[in-house]
Length: 86
Image 1 (cartoon, rainbow, N blue to C red):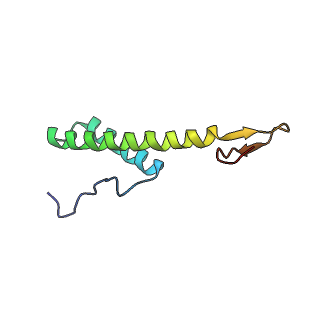
Image 2 (cartoon, helix red, strand yellow):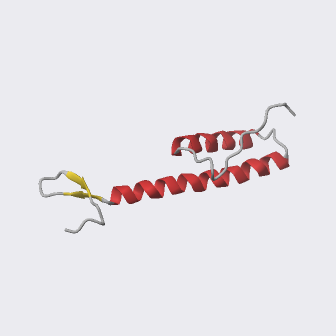
């Protein structure tokens, strides 16, 4: 083992969608390489599951924001504020 501490992901340490996706891609490449022990693969798999859930959450939040966009009669998009009375 090297003396470097491993970087761990935690809910208290949120990453951007791009960072999570990049790390997920690294995990997939490493696992597909087939040079890791079963224990290491299982740890990476669990991290991958957490990251994929984080990515899905980011995408869900983006989808909600997009659904709040409305088009006016002139074809311009506006952000629809659900709390504002119309």
